[in-house]
Length: 297
Image 1 (cartoon, rainbow, N blue to C red):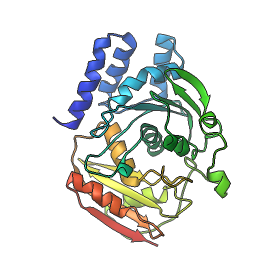
Image 2: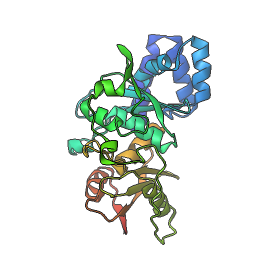
Image 3: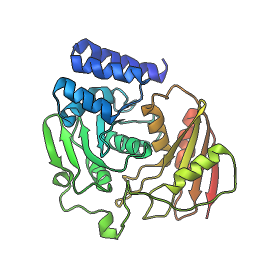
């Protein structure tokens, strides 16, 4: 069964709950071809219609977000919603890749944050998730430019400051990093290649966030007749860093495009003390795709 059909089937199962708000949310997802985000206008209208706060609406969205999970290892579905400063909702879900190392896994909170970042959001006000964030995700969220004010909301507990989950936190400020995740990044890497996919990967690398290793990396996927990009998001604790291929695959999935085959994959990367190419090549083999790689100084 095609992957999008699996997502659609899980979403359709929610219709049996026969709740008006669930029906309204499902209808909107279908209307926008399963693109897993809601505009600020739709959020405002729906909140008014059902007399809900934005956070309450996001809590209702969690079962829908979890339908986008890919969990062949754990069979444990986690959904998340990142609420941007714009008021937009960005879904996220955990993703696992059979046959690959655990380090290739995407956590739901990472998924929602990466979704918002690639969509052009400037910052996040709230993270809503159906299970308490693990330590990995708490540390990842601490890298955001809104970490000091970010609120975490769970079905059983709302309005929690991130730092109540991560007391005495260690993060970018301790390492004198001034421009953190979601702040504009521009690195002025250059590559004389007019291939649109290469240029898309280059642009992604120029917006990557790698203050600790300087291993700026961007990746572009040709998916159907579209180009989807991902970029590296590093973390002060290193392990919670979000890899560029995972960012691109996550965005592809949450745009409702996971059934479209990947025709090509291009990575552009600044030469540094580490590289993301080997990890990307390993995972891309699962899709039958060879990585086209360009190193820049």
